[in-house]
Image 1 (tube, rainbow, N blue to C red):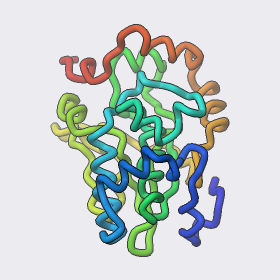
Image 2: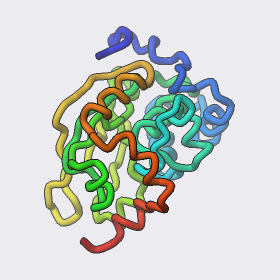
Image 3: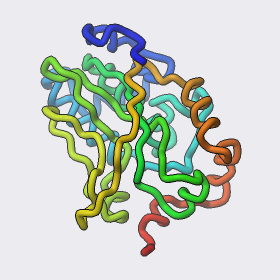
Amino acid sequence: MQTTNSNDPSGYLAPGRYVDSDHPAVIAFARRVADLAMTPREIAVKLYYAVRDEFLYDPYYFDTTVEGLKGSHVIEAGRGFCVPKAALLAAAARALGVPARLGYADVRNHLTSKRLYDMMGTDLFVFHGYTELWVDGQWLKATPAFNRSLCEKAGIRPLEFDGSADSVFHEFDVSGRRHMEYVHDHGTYADLPREELLATWREHYKSFADWGQVAGNGADFAQEVGKPS
C-alpha cells in the first residue's frame, strides 16, 4: 500500500509523525554524519552506515507506543528493532533533502536466537522494516537494522550499501548456508503505519501481548546470538 504518489519523490520529503525529520535530535544526527554539500548518493550511504552501526539492533527493545516507534526515539535509546531504525534512516535522509519512505516485508530465516524463536513461535518475521531512498532517479532499498558487531557474533555478513543497488537481506551466512528469504512484500509508506503493524502482529503472534515483558527479564539478544547453538 502506497500512501502517496511513488512517481513524485518530492512527496517523501515532509516530516511525518514517526519519520520525524524535523526533530532536533534527528537534524543534529543527520548534520553530524553528512551535509548538504554532498551528493544525495553520498548522503544516503553515510547515513545508512551511521544508522546501521551507531544504534544496536535489539528486538527485545520492543516499544510499540507512538513515541517508541519514532525515528528520534532510536537516537534517545541508542538501540531499536528494524521498524524504528528504518524510520530513523528515512527521517535523517529527509532532514538533508533526500526523499525517503518506509517499506515492509514478511521474511523467513531472519537473524534470531532460540529465546526469540520460542517467544514468537515461528521464524517468520511479519512487517520487517526497511527504508527506500531516492538516489539518482531511482528508489533504492536499504536495510539498516543489523549492526556490524551483531552480524559478526551471529556469523553473517553485514549488509553493505553503496547507493547504486538495493541492500535488502542476508541471503546466506558466512558459511554459505541460506539464511533469509523474503516471503511477502507489504509495499511502501510515507510514514509508519502503526495501527496496521500492531493489528498484523496480534494476528500472527499469539504471545504478542507478552513480548514487552521479555526485555524486563534481562534478555540480551547480542549475547544470545553469540552463543554456539
